[in-house]
Image (cartoon, rainbow, N blue to C red; front, side, top):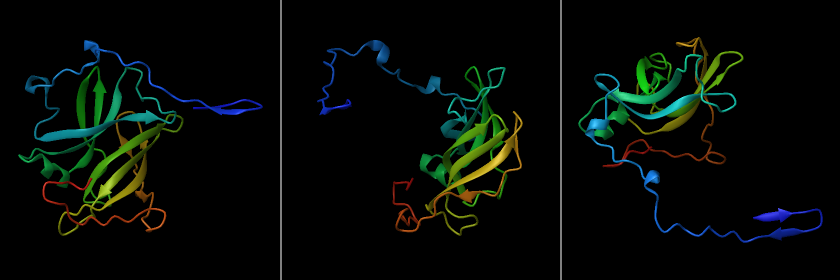
Length: 195
């Protein structure tokens, strides 16, 4: 750490606190078993969830305590890797730990990718404008699944239940090979997802 006063600059050496000899049981995570897993809806699996945040970075909640979440969703496949070739962002409403699926967040054909991968979402509480930042994987109507990834943003008006009037997604950073590296990943490798 560097300490600066009006007359001197002094660098101090950081040292960790003496480590505890035992780890308190309260800091250990419980084992998650099959009885702990409950499907949110029939036929779909959900993963990589993120909450709707306000412009200040706080979790958005209605007056009744409901929160909005986004998650990737796809049909169930025996091989979990296969779901990435079908992923779309879905909206969920949550209250007291109970999630209600609301369906795909974006209308069909709006995303420039063949799939939608993780992102984040922010709500301007003054204007009700919701901005979704997301990764578009592949290209719309591609002949075979590719792993090209591009970052986009789209905005719509949030009425507390749904988002309407999504704008055409805008690519945030175009890979130019100088400031933003090009990573050409047209296909995956056996046993690996290029995410």
